[in-house]
Image (cartoon, rainbow, N blue to C red; front, top):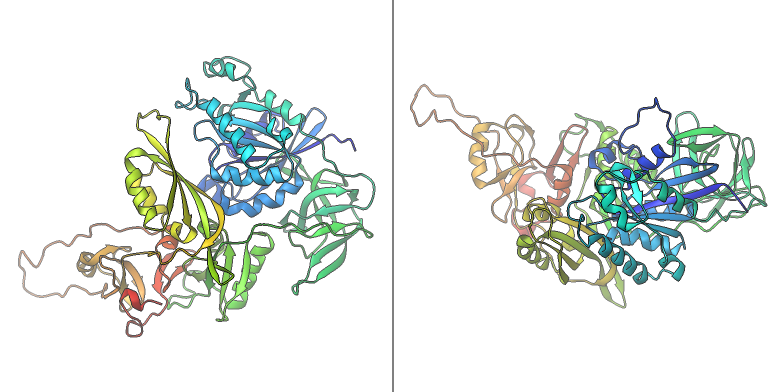
Length: 623
């Protein structure tokens, strides 16, 4: 079947420039009128994506190259969102592999590339950021191409896939070239500064292999929602075509795990024009669009004609971690947000897993607590922040890894972790991860940066448990200049006990509002998380103890007034400084016997058992 269609995705590690590249692809293809104003990173539409500077969910857009319509999907670069990547690979026929000219292919690039190679996609290598000072005048760009080729071979790419075209680009300036020798000319301001060489390579990507004849089939790769149209099924038409008003079947799975079929009528059909969704009367085979009319949808469902059959459901890698979600049981419940019941919390989590195939929901023995199973701390943090912004109040516990047992041997998930850091910090970082059962696989020097500070790249194999809660420590050890990325390395025998946190907690032992006078004496025992004038309750954590045991303290004690005035008694009390605990820091810090209380206004830490006389303070007594 010959179509004027190309379906492509962009593959890249976090912060290698894929969203910026998509911006210029849309602009230079004439997607926007001259009078239209466009924002940077247009595909990062979610508020958290723009704040964090990362892509969280896969998003679609399209542009025209002459008479050819190009559907482009921007994929997440972080391994925690691998489920987003795996489900969109069925929608595309080619991929642009974007690699930083200095950093080269990193583990999360490898993860997505492996999925693309398994789907036999046509891949174009794009070496981005060739204008970085470290790359200019060095051999880094050539080395980057060699590393990419080695990665293709290592991942089992075919001969045709290994014979990939190469583009050298500066996405933030909107130009590229297919001639490495021409890079200095472009850096000096010369050359034709457009993305035309990349556009030409996109047109070389194979057309969709969809069949125009036969029953219509579409695999639901994503779900959108409209206040006016309800649920929208997003996917590529694998065969046939769909028209407005047509009757179709949804092939899904019931709650009992049995196959179910539902008949519905198509109420609206939407297609992509640039960043917009526009209503059309028909979508033909090979194109990507959205179908409205079916009230119940799940990712992996098949939508077909009345005589059609279901396609193979989308399968993603199994979760490796879990986190417990609970209703809010603190004394402050309902004061700052919507205090939800267990039924509402369960329904909200169910809604999340319907639109994210990499998440799972499991019930616990406690009726108002639920396990969410996922890929990593960042994925959980994104979900918690999303629910918080929706106005919910709830609590979460410390993430834990999912163990397996084979032939009586206890197995745990293992990560292959790559660290890029200054050479002067390598000793401290190596010691930190070796204490957490990490094994150093390689120690490589990287080319000197513009600061003339030598950098090294360390590769560790480490239990997932050993990585939990180390992000802040790693940033501190490398003074904020270290890069970290990881990929799953399967399951290996349990590595034994790993201490999560050496220090105990400073815990309020009564209800009230903190005073500076009381906190001044408490701060001598550790590090404070809160300042004066904060409402506390018994069992609420207000700081980190300097020792390994918990300490119950009185943070609300007022200064007694007397009629005696002396220089000593009127001395000014000063707090040394408050350690602000963000959501990510709280997830890293808490222990198994503690909760994070999440409300729209505040994030607090507390003990699972609030009364001081019902819990121990020694490390060995903790739940």
